[in-house]
Length: 163
Image 1: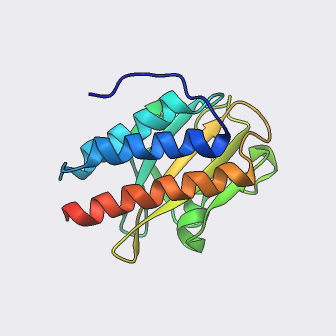
Image 2: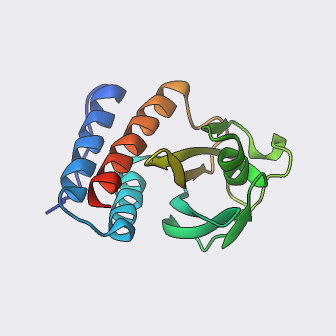
Image 3: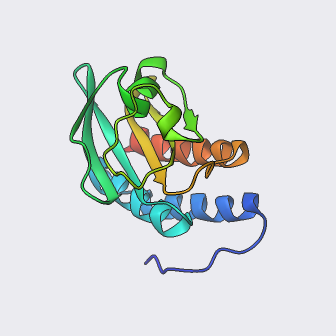
């Protein structure tokens, strides 16, 4: 059973621990929605200074809201629109230091100041994007981006094993 804990050590050690917790949470669980829900909850508990953590699932030519932690959110995002839709269209992580400087930013929560969106690729195709918002400017570093991408890759491996 998962228990809340304080994460200590270097940033790399902390991310290794949370990624190992993810692996334990999703091991043997075939339900993708349950795994996405636990992943968003785990990150929400782990990451300081965030106000929204969740997934948008690919549906048709855009995204639809999936499991998340935070305030109610936009339900549908077209490909190419906002940070999430741009990440989907470009098939790459997008890290935004100040969302107000991002052309076409979709403001679901007015408190959000910075954002990172990471594609979740399952069987070679984008299945979803992980979206994390913060009320702080410049919240997400390049080092954190690398660790979050590794977290998402482990989640993708778990989804691939169960499908």
